[in-house]
Image (cartoon, rainbow, N blue to C red):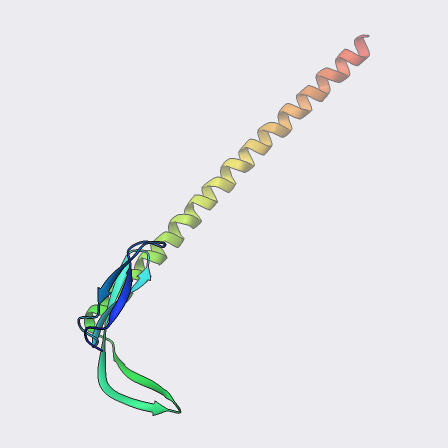
Amino acid sequence: MLGKKMLVPLTASLYVPGKLDDADKVLVDVGTGYFIEIWFTRNWISLGTGLVYKLFVTEKMQKTMAEGKDYCERKINLLRSNYDQLVEVATKKKSIADEAGVILQAKLKQLGAAT
């Protein structure tokens, strides 16, 4: 497995050739700028024709997952706060628009009565 040739993604559409240096330890992109390091063991269990590797969750991985969860919770709270503020502003603007409509209708009624 070591030295195996592979394409390494630099962007969504740009790949460069590379070689696998360490098959027991890999970095996995889990999104939002977070990477987790996963270590595999050589102890495998055969299930039919497939191989299953045991996965050890490292302390570093747990910390990264906790940081990712915290980030997502903070982002959700920020979006909720922004949504609440947006609803408040939209309600005020609708109220102002309704008042302006009532005033315009009253003025049109006065103009219609004057002619």
